[in-house]
Image 1 (cartoon, rainbow, N blue to C red):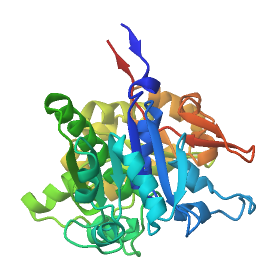
Image 2 (cartoon, helix red, strand yellow):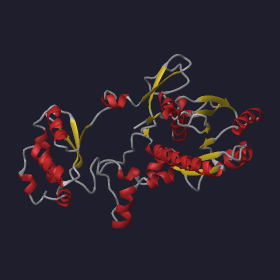
Image 3 (spheres, rainbow, N blue to C red):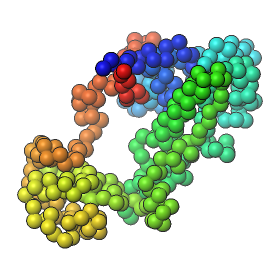
Length: 362
């Protein structure tokens, strides 16, 4: 088996990025990781991408970038332009003539007003692939992730019962939309290879979010069940997503999805009799009697130190995970392999996680 390098897969491809914040730039970074040249256009009037200023209190104040900005802007050539200036706009047009792809999240009205609408860019380069990211499919509304989480049901479902909604701790709708746009660009590249023609591909954060509702959507569409906040628990499986403290106050989560796994769990905890209990002898019964099941299991986990019961469960092939903070996450060797470094002009070494999480072999 011959492993192919993903770092030069798109070598020779030129991408212009007319987008900021997270979703669009993460698409650009994906192609940068795959060897493409990515030219990121930033607004010099506003001092660049707005995320340059989204700094934590612990970050240096004398830099023109933040950790947030670094997360999706690896290995890009940055060009600061004022597109309301005819001179700067001409510079952009010159780059567009030799580009393969333009990634944009500009509002339709704004783009047309400054001369960079999809149609205007296509006139400059007919073979161009334009990847247009919108917030909503039929509106120019401002589209920040938390708003999309609210309007597509994620915020309603997320959190603990009888408590206020909780947003997901990353802008996951942006991430999902970025994946949709990557897929669309790859399809457009295939179309271009077959026909020699450019195309316009469009997605929105809203559509990406709706597409990602999967089983929670069909729970409503087919069973008329409105998903409720359940914390980490699962509406269809138990014990799945249930949390257990160990003797040394570490926190574990279970994802027991089969009868064999439940039997192995009971054997590890020395409660084989539970397997024959009619309240827990099937997944349906365990979901129905979830609270009683949790009251039975929780004190048993507190008899063991985390390392002991964790390793026992792994050996028995019971799906279990440690609830790690970021420090613990990146102490793992596999997570370390997912890091990318870049030294900026001020000499500071920056780090971020890869967007490419696959390998190709032949």
